[in-house]
Image 1 (cartoon, rainbow, N blue to C red):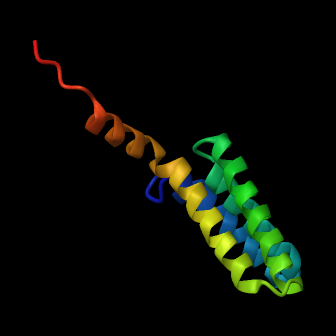
Image 2: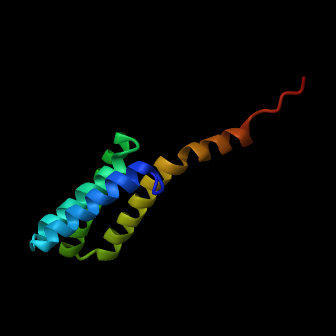
Length: 113
């Protein structure tokens, strides 16, 4: 979903704003946060439902690493592990095809016919 698309401007944005302000007006702050999380996941998964599983996996991974960070003595190691895992997920799903294409283009044998 693009920010300048009709579905965003006339459906997603009004539902999100009205729902959030309606819930906060009645002091349902925890429910309003959950509503925003749900709407964010809907926004992320609107284009392709498979991307939703990637972001949920990343959220669960980061949450578990953050909770483990509070209980361990090796905080720097846990922090670096989280950073490396997040960059690895980003590289794999966003840049891996580009990387493979360039490696194949460089290593392709030159025909001399």
